[in-house]
Length: 332
Ligand SMILES: *Cc1c(COP(=O)(O)O)cnc(C)c1O
Image 1 (cartoon, rainbow, N blue to C red):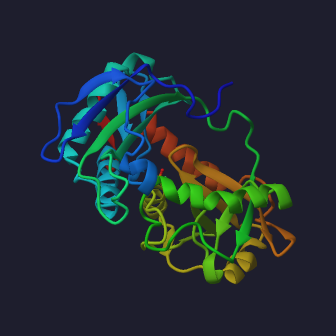
Image 2 (tube, rainbow, N blue to C red; image 1 turned 180 degrees about the horizontal axis):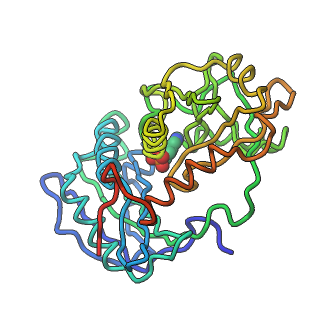
């Protein structure tokens, strides 16, 4: 089995901003790019990306989940990095065109086609540490992916980390390369020292998110997750799961959650916790590690509600259930 995101369709679609306008999008080989070594992105991290998926339905149609939300977030990341403004209609056209071109390669459920729009500053100007790149490149890569849970439905171990933070607090809502590099030392240390799978960043004792996923706590009919601000990524999966929970009549609480409250609630037998993101939808959390001690979440096994909500999301994505909120865009 190949690792998630390591297989690519042979072509991608790309458009260049030359300082004045975007070029006509072109389908080009996806295995190389030619950039000046002084390109802004390499030195000053003017880069952002998106992650969304296309799904094959039983009728043969290909459908993208929450295309509009991901395009909007890409435009916002772009703005917060002072990259040249993204033409949202152009990006939508690019995503639809390249996905349609490789519609025949979209895997059957539980697989899907992962779509990775990327925007980078290309100006060769190493003197521009305090100035934006006037030129940029926008491209859309495709990567067919299999079942995220093929390795089994084991639960995750999360280290609650109260010192430091994932990234600079004003950058958390930006899907930008530097944020992931800045979280790595904590994650590598947690893996080596306490065999954690991920770090749940809890700066100043407030639960935030992990390196690449949002955190949700389920307790009875309550769903608790941090409210949206600049310090965390505004996940589309988080938003979708909360909507389904509201539809089910659950009490959705977007608010601050302290480490103390989390540990107290997690000890109850009916409590569940999960990470949300496009790759896995919902991944169950079995253990929280805090100050050298392991705390089970509920029974420590994958929670029923977590699995139910994941199934509800999958059923909409795979066309097996109604799409009451109009989340799917049909490509072909
Ligand atoms: C992408 C990402 C998420 C999940 O966002 P989705 O839109 O649900 O895929 C959460 N946190 C971080 C830091 C991310 O980069």
